[in-house]
Picture 1 (tube, rainbow, N blue to C red):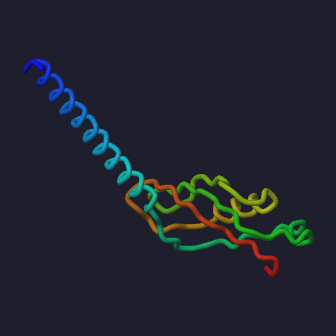
Picture 2: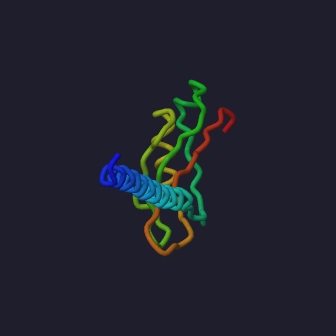
Length: 121
């Protein structure tokens, strides 16, 4: 084996190792950024209770509706969308969350909320 061939193998291995380390570092930075965003929560200052739809009561439909709310820096809800849950309950959940007020923050944030509809409510 010539010195040139050995050098290429060593250099190739080092190049591969550097690429793997760079990819790992990038993945770590991305994971931390996503975790920081996911952990972003705003305290609720005031809530509006959801109105249980009469048809859902009669049909004994209950469950949790998960919604995502966009909250401005002043704490006002600017947008709400349903992520999961029964459609008969989701409209009431969205309407209630639109009336919520959050503690003011430094910037616009997105929060995920679970709105529970129990048959006894």
